[in-house]
Length: 446
Ligand code: CTP
Image (cartoon, rainbow, N blue to C red):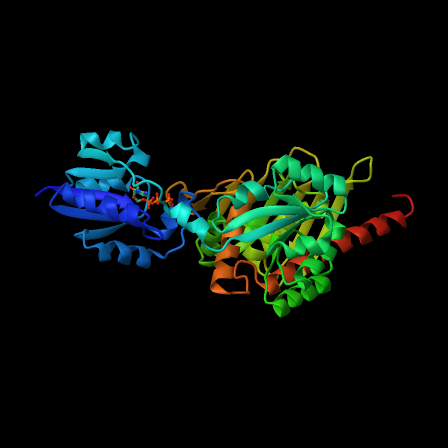
């Protein structure tokens, strides 16, 4: 009996899928079809799959060609499957030509010509597309145009700036369809607004866009006034839309897995969280608070919203700008320590120390696909590795599209209560810095 195997995502099942399964079956007696799992697709950066795994399996089953359906869960599984199922022939579409020749030592490999003029990607673009408009004061798009290409159903359409020259140049630079002169015209032409403005202006634009019933992504922090943020979140709820702060960290698989491991007790009782972040690695940060929001968010996600005390010490450079901030946050029985630099070259990293071990995220931990755990009394290191692509924004966009399609307005990655607590934390740290300055001003001889 000749055993044949083939693989695919089989999203939005189409004629091309049907044809390849039919031809694969004709090449043998028994056909095994591997359907990619959701997490494997995310791992390999395929963030645009629409159908669930069960739907995709069901569509393959309905063709009647598959004698057995398996799930493809990781890179390198093909070789294990060939050995496990005693496969004689691996069949793939011509888009993979040559890529699996290394498996010819184990079975025959053929690449069948793809059916012309059809693909899941093409079908996805035929569904509803949400248009993004960018409100900005610079010529830098924050990666939105590039990152949105990786999430299906999104198209960055136009730009608005109070500085018309900026809007025009922005449009030319990114080859956008339009720069729009009036805010009303801009809001009428899109469903999603990305507010990419310097700190103080964000809240005004966010409010305007939410009032018009638009989904909003804004650079973070939107405001350091927690009450204002709460007002905006309530406005979003009233309008039935979602307000996202651009903190990609909370959408990363690696960070979510890390938080889950910490809360699940991998390193015992958490005693301390320490992290360091440098502004030079955050190209979009227009303000020092844009830097602080990341470590504070990490602390909040790891230790919760019930912090007791916060102190910030700041060193300024000769121009009076923040060069270094040292923030200490006290919880009931845990301490967090954040070091943020405005221009110094510091070694970045995040370390969580527990009673039974520690977790380390090296280098730029806010954009990571990796962390490692050292557990007392066990073999050296436990390593956790996940895919991470681009600047992380695509993971936020993907979550947003899922929420829109599920008609959910509560962001499970950063609950409203957490956003509020984060703004409280930031404003408390900032106020403490001001009082500290005042204290030193009025202390004679210091
Ligand atoms: N396939 C094909 N002809 C097409 C589309 C796909 O023969 N027009 C084959 C692929 O070569 C692959 C299998 O069907 O061997 C499963 O492909 P999959 O990646 O799931 O489908 P695509 O339509 O290529 O999906 P996407 O556009 O998301 O890449």
